[in-house]
Length: 64
Image 1 (cartoon, rainbow, N blue to C red):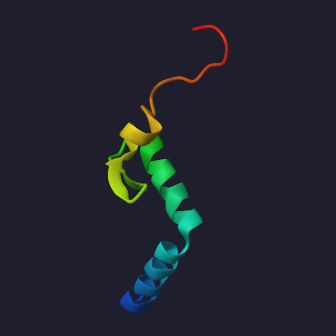
Image 2: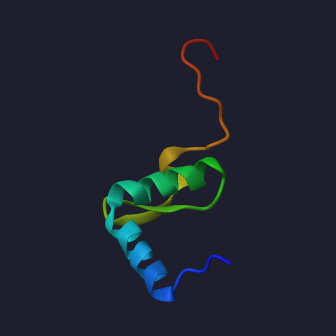
């Protein structure tokens, strides 16, 4: 049985929160899955759907 101590888990979580790039990548992955994500835009907390748009909409260049 693989078990990790609570202290190690806390340290890993703190590392993840400190790394801004990893945090944004995690938020981007959650947004792509359709989960509710909160992002800060100009100091205002907003839902990612309002800022980044609908994750399910197909993106195409050129014709509609």
